Amino acid sequence: MLYIAFFSMIIINLYAKNKKYLLYTSLAFLWILYGWSSGNADTNIYISRYYNYDTFHNLEPLFKELMNISNKLGLSYQQYLIIISAICLCIISITILKLTDNFCYVIALYSIYPFIMDVTQVRQFIATTVIIFGFRFLLSSNNKNIYKYIICVIIAFLIHVSAIMYILLILPKILNLRKTIYFTIISILIIILTIHTNIIYKISSILHINTKISETIIVASHAYTGKSLLVYRIEIFIYFTLAMITLIYIRYKRKDRLNKQLTKITKGNYIIQSKAIDFTIKANIVMLILIPLLAYSADLYRIQHGIFLLNYIAMSYGLIKYKKRFIIFGTKTDLIQVILSLVFSLSNMVLWLLITNTINTVFYPFFDNNLFFNILK
Image (tube, rainbow, N blue to C red; front, side, top):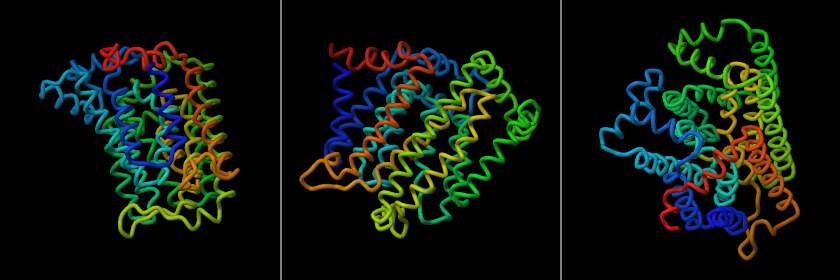
């Protein structure tokens, strides 16, 4: 029954016109699915960390402090999860509302992927939410907002150390397409050349995170083989290819319309939709740097999931809003845009399930082990 409800919610958000009550209803449903989740691959790990946070000396300070405050308030892990997920989903919804008019469309794509994965990876989800909040500063017409985004990265870094990689998203803001490509190629070559040196340890030592980095790399070396690393690299490349095909199609098919459309964030602060898509294209190019970095830890592949919402927002631009017709029954260009976006989202969900082999530990528990809906059975 929950399977039907979840996928019906996705179809309705794709099919119906944008209404805020529909967005809020969908977010309330997603909140129940997240806050009352249990029995997935990482549940016991997070429960152990929550009740014994003071024994985990290498946990990021802000994430540790969140658990400390929650424990002092006498909250159980499930209550903590309910509150944290509510806050994060509110931040995500506010961001979507500020950055696009087609908010129901974006929430539908996000629900397909990577929401189910986010339910499992709680710490990554919290850190990514901070980065998502910072997207408004990256897409803003005001270049001074870049400093606000840097603050978001620092906060996210204090929750999950891997979030420091999101600092790369500053580059598409200050570089044109050609320079972005050059930077990415040069960076990849440098990483490959230094892959077997101790440079990463020296840098982490300067940043006083050498213990955390060493621990992550050691764990990764036991958890992943050369074959699995190759699979993750292929997954990132497929993600990149599908994203670029969709965004380039939208950018050039919608050129005239996008140049005229502005999305207001605050007074005097707005998004030029064509430039937002250009930024997202460059952001995906920069994220290719993750491919060689997987040699240090395959867990870094999760970083690309942080910009899924950025891609979905860009993919929502240019769609015509009809008063009497639903959005996917618009022009031929509308239909192709929707199909490409769905292929991008669905393909990544299928790839994730196949690559990580987590259908029994993540996908099924998401639907079958929800405490809220199990009470109703």
